[in-house]
Length: 323
Image 1 (cartoon, rainbow, N blue to C red):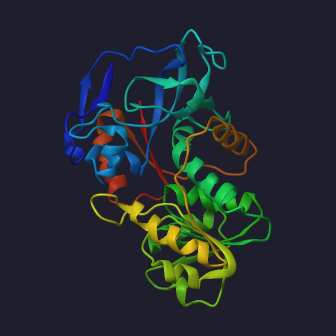
Image 2 (cartoon, rainbow, N blue to C red):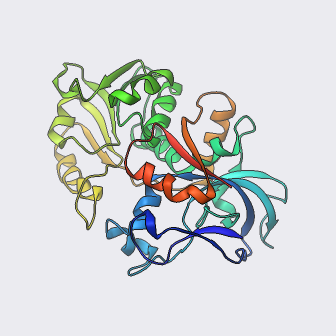
């Protein structure tokens, strides 16, 4: 089968299209014929091995442990392991695995759900990691409620476009912060207010938000707290700043140190891949409560270009690779 493989850490230049053997599935896995794969920032981090924390977390200290790139996936079940009970050959599914930039991939049964029937494979493939992150930030950490005023920083990116739509689905009044080029997108997916950070500063406004979801990492903790209601909640989700060792994870330390001493809830999210959340997202998608904001699709042979594009931070929403 054809797959995008890397032998060493580095830029997108280390990604190569090769012919390799199809994966062999275990008892609790399914073999997927991959139709599409999402391209999320984690792919770039695993490709480069940066921050170094990525390597310590199990992706290989000196070279990639998993040579085939890609984690978000959507496809059709080709075969099932002996212990698999939830899926059968022919099922259309989406979820996560290791090595989705390939014609076939092995995925754990508990990392998949049935694909929403009203979405294409490309649309479904970009949901899992970003969609679960947005859902857990809003519902679990943020405890969003109808009528809450929610500020989403980085609203035009992968997690942000899901967060805007899900917050609206939960009944919140949503303000999205993004660049000029993404303002029309953020407005089109339902944001009540859109702030262009290149021209306006939300920190200068008198508005105080019940919940702030920070996907960008470009603001200090004090600035974020100034925009937060006295008993509001701040959820730090990510960001592309930080050092080479821990990257955006360095934002977690001051949040954890300060949180016990203030009335505001200051939280950091490390998203978890859960089958029940995939199912919840599938139900919401089928109910029309959100639709993935798909910016571009690339064929498998151009997957390195897709990773470059996402790594540059210019994607309006999500990017997919089609197989």
